[in-house]
Each structure stands twice: as C-alpha cells, then as structure tokens.
Image 1 (tube, rainbow, N blue to C red):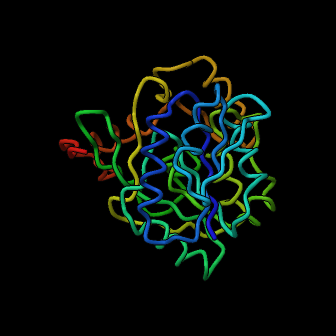
Image 2 (tube, rainbow, N blue to C red):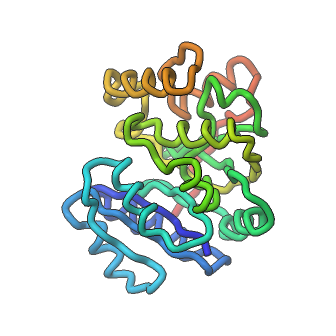
Amino acid sequence: MISVLIPTRSRPDSLRQALASLLRQTFTRFEAVVVDDGEGEGMEVVAGLADPRLRALPNPGRGQVEARMQALAQARGDAVLFLDDDDLLLDPAYLYRVWRILSREEAVVYGEGVLDLGSWEIPYRPGEPGDWILVDNRILASGTALPLRLVRELGGLDPEVGDYWDWDLWLRAYRKGVPFRYLKGRGVSIGVHGANQSHGNRPDERRFFLERLRQKHGLPPLRLKDHLLLALEGAEDGSVPMFTFGHTSPG
C-alpha cells in the first residue's frame, strides 16, 4: 500500500481537487493522510468525501514540515508519496507506475509534469538522475515516493532545514547510494503562485534555511531558486529541455 501524505492549510477547494486526482487513480491500494495545519477546513473536506481510504487529523505542531512529520508518523503503507494540497496527480496510472518500481526495489521515485500558472502551464522535466542534485533541487516533492522503511532509516524529515526538508531527504538518500528512478510523462501538476515561489515569498527566511541545508551537507554556495526559475534557466542555456509554453486544459 502507498500512503499519500498531504499537508493542508486554508485551501479546501485545492485540497478537494488534489484528493479527486488521487481518487481517479487506477491503483486503489492507497491511503491519504491529510494533516490540517489550519482551522479545520481540510478535515471537513475529507469528512465530506466519506472515503475510508482518506484520513484527516490536526497538526499537533506548527507549519508544513511538522504537518508532514505527523502524516509520516501516521502512515500505514509500505511506501509514502508526498503531495501538496495545491498539486495534482495528472496521470491516472501514476500510483501504479510508482508501485511497480517500489514493489521490486528500494528507490526514490520521482516524476515530471507541468507547472500550472493559472491560464498557462509549463511542461517540467527534471531529467535523469545525476550529480546536479548537489547544486539544484530539480525534483518535485509532489509525486516523489520512497519506501516508508527507508524514510525512517534515513532519519525522517528534518524541521531544522525548513522549506528544504525535501532536498535534504533526497541528498541523504543520494549519499547513501539509493537509486533514483525517473518517471517520464505528464505525471503531476504543480500549482505555482506567490505562496510557494522561493524567490518571491519570504526570501530572507528561505535563504536562512538554504544556508542551513548547505552547511549540513557541505554543499557549494547555493542560489535561491524555485522550480519555475529552474525551468526558465534550463530554457535559456539548453541544459535542461524542460520548458515550453502551453495553454492550461479546461477543467
């Protein structure tokens, strides 16, 4: 079984869409663990859907990392997959593709998809695994999965690196020699807006956490980026063929 870990805060409509994309999956052996970091709107959404595979609970801590840590502590699956409340699984076979890999080997499975800017979308392709992980976090947190046992063996999530909890986890797996498996195709949709853009939202706080991450892993100097900026940079220098514009499909 795959445990899908979803932190949420004051975005009930987005959460409802994220859960709908999960309920459309052809692979049905999953549970969603929704941790509400807000006023309870997320718990109401889950209750309204009345699906026994969906569970919701309040965040006993504060903030996105603590919410994910609580979801992780409650996970019952053999593997966990991260999904933000404003993101979607576009490919109805995405969980099946993840499980097909993780049922055979211990790995980090990540995918590609689109960045949804509202009326526009940008195809996003992080590329095959490589040492670029030491300078850029191209991997989308949403849609990335790995065995629950491995997450715990790696030490779980580190709240001390704040926004970079995901890059920190990928780096620990990479340095342990865990294989990374790349799922191509239109797998996930990432909502891009002011609340989740590194270079435009809480820059001083994010730089603080980025420096913590750099020091923890002994990385070279790092520049504050988000996935939109990475896509734009890849288009400019041709190093990462991930960027073309397209209209967002209706619905």
